[in-house]
Image (cartoon, rainbow, N blue to C red; front, side, top):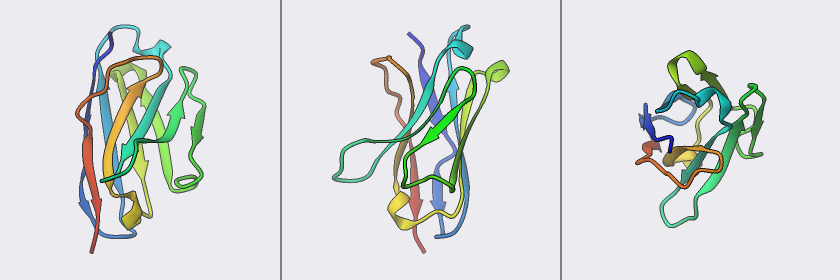
Length: 113
């Protein structure tokens, strides 16, 4: 199955930006819909957004207008551009291949002054 490795997390001040990357294995990456999810301490994992194999995107209301998902099929990579970050965006962020049971390690994003 396709495996993923997330990177790009870190500590950022409120109002700042980060770009997360998700590198995926497999030669048919371009055929998959890809999702970003996040899990804050003590909370359930929640959906952030999705990019389809054709490049259409959809976002949770909590991040709409601030986060942008894109993909580079030649590099087997999906990106999550996060702007205007808020403390409530603090979480471990995961990318996920739609329909897969595999979850990577995620990357920690902390928004704090």
